[in-house]
Image 1 (cartoon, helix red, strand yellow):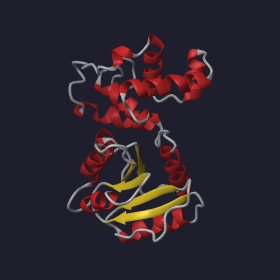
Image 2 (cartoon, rainbow, N blue to C red):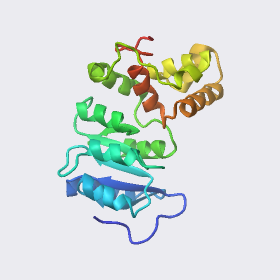
Image 3 (cartoon, rainbow, N blue to C red):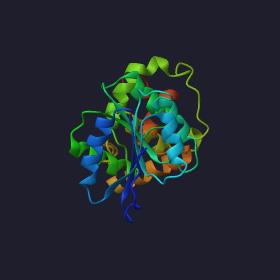
Length: 234
């Protein structure tokens, strides 16, 4: 484990790198070190070490590999996200739309990225997830879920999340469009609303359903049958 010697500057995004490949961590660290608003505060080579480090280190965003010894990234993510006020987790995957990315989202990750992502996209993703936005486009998450929808428990029976009945008709409508991959601007145009109003609806949906971000909205919409594989409304 390597941690920075000094605390991250106020307002800086505190990032932890979790990957068993030292060279990959080094590359990510070099990219992040050049940013005035980011600081790599910790590193770990496997999930067990990551959990130990997190007990003593304040972290905002974790870049999490999935295939690691001792404890894989999916289970590590699940344990991190079960804690109170956990850091946001970005799953790092080698192949687009693989089962590890799907499992990572189910475990509570806020998104997934390819390991060979251009530096600019990586930095934008870290900033986005830190601010509470979706890291991957909902449309990408939807394609992932379309592929792995048969793995979702009980979609045929359309189990109900207790919070869904608390949504207004408009909020339910917005939720379906979010799950179909539309941005706030696209939803605003579809429903003839202002973008600010759509953002307010999305915020209320997250609060009522106890979700962290738009990615979890997409996952829940599939689990409950609100949206079917292929992107149609339930």
